[in-house]
Image 1 (tube, rainbow, N blue to C red):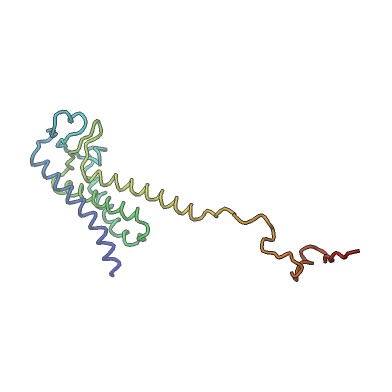
Image 2: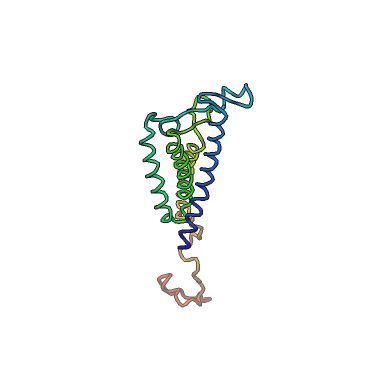
Length: 199
């Protein structure tokens, strides 16, 4: 039971922070900007980065518009799957644990919008990239963490399985004593050497 509590504390702490930030920023945007209205602290930065109140009825980054109802149920399924499966993930598998926590926060953040106002509020606009929000960014970062983490783990495992280079001396009998006192010199040399005698 204690294990489940610790696992879910980890999961819901990260996801909870994402959900809170996502909903607070969306509320501010809805209160301060009309749909389609643009704001930036400086005029010169508008071509590169700005806030714009955008209504999204599709998936993250404006993909598949008009399918809000489909993505609502999909988000519910994903969130439940993460919650059920999370305690089974070993704690050493930290990339998957962090990725699942970030993705849960992102999925629930956008799900709250779909359930309460019927669409997702997007407001972050960079260059010509699609408008997105903190929940979308959390989902994308979760995928990136998972990919990078798996690459790091696989690289470490590969290094740990590599055999160290052989630094032994090339002598086939490095610890053999070739003195005449050796009881096995006949076996090694194939004959018994005789001492030289003066003529």
